[in-house]
Amino acid sequence: MFSPIHHSFGPHVDASFVKKAFALACNPGTYVRGTSIEKLRQTLSKKFRGEVGLFSSGREALLGYLKAIHLRPGEEVIVQGYTCVVVPNAIHAAGGVPIYADIDQDTLNLSATSVALCITPRTRAVICQHTFGIPSDTKGLRALCDEHRILLIEDCAHIIPDDTGPTEIGRLGDAILLSFGRDKAISGITGGSIITRDPEVSLEISILESNAVERSWGNVFTLLTYAPRMVYIVRPLIWCGLQKPILALLNVFGLFSPILTEEEREGHMSPLLHRLPNACAALTLHSLSRVQSINDHRRMLTKFFLEYGKEKKWPLLPGIHSDMPLQKFPLFVSGAKEKRALLKKDNIHLDDGWTGCVVCPDTVDITETGYESGSDPAAEKACMAILSLPTHPTMTIKQAKVLAERIDELLK
Ligand SMILES: Cc1ncc(COP(=O)(O)O)c(C=O)c1O
Image (cartoon, rainbow, N blue to C red):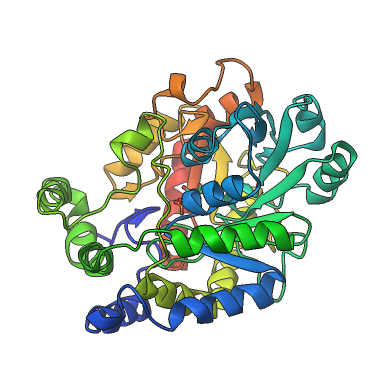
């Protein structure tokens, strides 16, 4: 029995992450407040050349931005079909209306053509998501947004560029959205940032941040227990399914915080903003200091899957290149759901929540998201046929080889 191949059982939790989380857990005085928050702000400001707002999650950072630009009731924000429910939830919470534009099936991202079809006099902004780290057409979208005088928000939840690129990411947006969630490009267990270059909007965001509610000490402690929970409970027990009752038990004692609340699955987001806890800022800084090696590891696995797939004539996405530090490697196959179920028996867990639904995960109440069935055919097709392969920091090349061979058997 090899260790599980997975997307979501602590993708960033390696020895260095555990050590850092343990050191932080031993220092309760710095859970909520401390010097890491300002250090992270300065580091991000230098990297993305803008003013940095820090919140407890990416979804809150997005809500903060939409509040700061005074989105008016009924104003529209264009997002892509094939996104996470927290994105439209934040738009709804700000009083806006999410409008879903279809994706380009070669890149899984918005295209200027599909966005142009959705622009109306009520459009205020476009959120371009660099899906799984595949760069979106920021140049085309920037030109379109300028023409219509609308804002461009780059959603970099899935990718943080490093010194070698991708150079087109994080440069042209009016705002850059980052997430430091557990399975994102970098991780602080939770956290998010919005980076802006308009002084008036930045000021509004800083006011929102200073009025935001602090996470409790107990809540931060629960977050810090995430690393040992993954290493000592979830990963060892995943193959026999025992981790589920144990996590349910931890949930009862408030020792587990799910990524999505029941309320969020039903299409609602609390309007309350929370500050980024200092301990999460410290973990994010730790992860950010390793972004080059994290991305190089992702590049290595992307290149491996791409070359293996080419040799075996897998159905590869034309928009993927071997120098991309993908957050995950997408393949499109028939019977993707059945294949995932078969792989699970081999301790390979490829369900990442981005399957079977245009607004993910598939447990979301789609009627509350504002998505109209049939409106984004490419997104609907992609989410049904996708089989994503992990490229995260704790996925080894040995595991990638095992996975590639198993996938190849299934594709034949
Ligand atoms: C594309 C995308 N944008 C933004 C977010 C929000 O990130 P967070 O989980 O930090 O709220 C997510 C999270 O799931 C996401 O997938």
